[in-house]
Image (cartoon, rainbow, N blue to C red; front, top):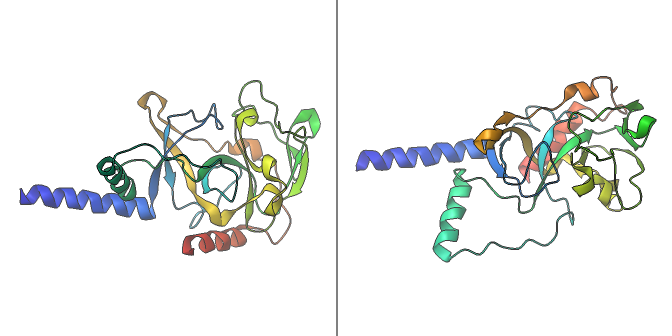
Length: 240
């Protein structure tokens, strides 16, 4: 009995340490990242990006709602005991966290990048280069669809990122929030981590691609907005 208790406690401690410092599981609630991620998918998110590792264009990132992106959260109906058990298991990392207060999108622009829609062939442009997003864009969707037609031209501020869902016609993202602080860009300090693997359902197990080839020809953005500034922004987030 004592040995079993030690094993259980050790497993919980190890799970908590992994969840705190290395990786965390998240539940996908909506269709905004289809076809890459579907409602009900579970993903493992690396907590080392941003931080020791920099975000890259094309990364799929989980971040806290920067303010007003999500509708008011409706709490799940659970009994007191069930709620407590679920809360503890999510806290130590055994159960995936739901997306309450969090969003998951693809990074299109980094600090100093000029992101514009639309350029040649109706595609997005990043630093003057037209990018082909057909590898991950939802079939039938245009590169940008928003209430004003989806046109925009923005330089991503220092310490921020421009994010968009792969299912453009069903995603509330940077395009929809250009009237707020940062012109729709999200502070990197709000990033939880980079989604690396879909682990559930088992038939959808896959390593998530950052589609680096899509952005291979994109030059660096404005000077002074680079990796060191990104790390500083991530450190601010980790200390808050």
